[in-house]
Length: 356
Image 1: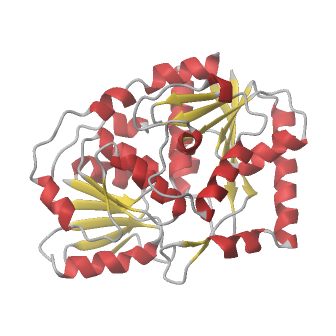
Image 2: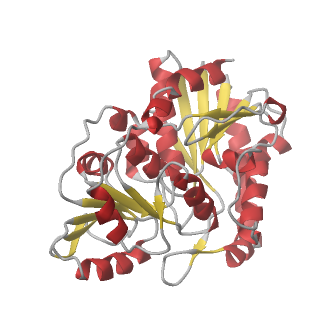
Image 3: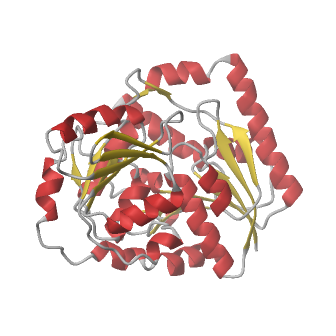
């Protein structure tokens, strides 16, 4: 089976899920013929994706969010206005045509859409014979058993609209979940374990005396620096997205920020004593698999939903990077890892869903 990927390029999660699924498909005798990935002038395709996907990569222009001045959160309303400007609308229509053209030229047996809205619009606009399956944890947000912990806000409603656009003309939606939940065949919604990178699955986790962090927006580094000033004896390593920073930047002794490095992050995740991050699902799932204590701080509305959901899996949530609760949790006994048992079923379940 020849498979084409379309990947949303915002954040790290969808890219690492695509890498994991590409490895899984190759192990089962299939081939990824190409990966199309969304990018913008503010969001370029990272090197690790092009190195690890092991397939030709082509980029297209896709919508993105504008960040606040402190580089911590997203401006939802201003982002909508920004993306609806005439020049950008034209670029997005060009991207929709580009996606449809590549599908027509490559004639894949299957298209896998990793939560890219423009792929959904391409299938809505053009008649294409290749079936499409959508893969993302966000599809759990439209699952009947997903309970919102608070009243839906405007950003949450936009998220659910975006999710529905992604799945236009979709054969199946694979909702990647922290735990088992019933399928909803009437909505073409099927629950599956997370897609974890092969490198993580084969780690032998250690517990070395340092904390590891991953922050989507580098503005959060100020909060971490302020906390560390009161805990200067604690060794902390943080991976961030600051493009003009050196590979490793020591803010002060025992606090070092690193540009995202695929291999170094994986190694440190396996060796750290605890992990903290903004509330993207992928890094959280990797740390859960390795049985690490975890603290998450949501950076925007979608991540608030992620944090609510992660709390059911034993993940601590907070409004700021005060890492004191994480230090306290390190000394507690490690419990049975039910998440790992669920995640280990991923290949069997996902391949069955893809090959049906």
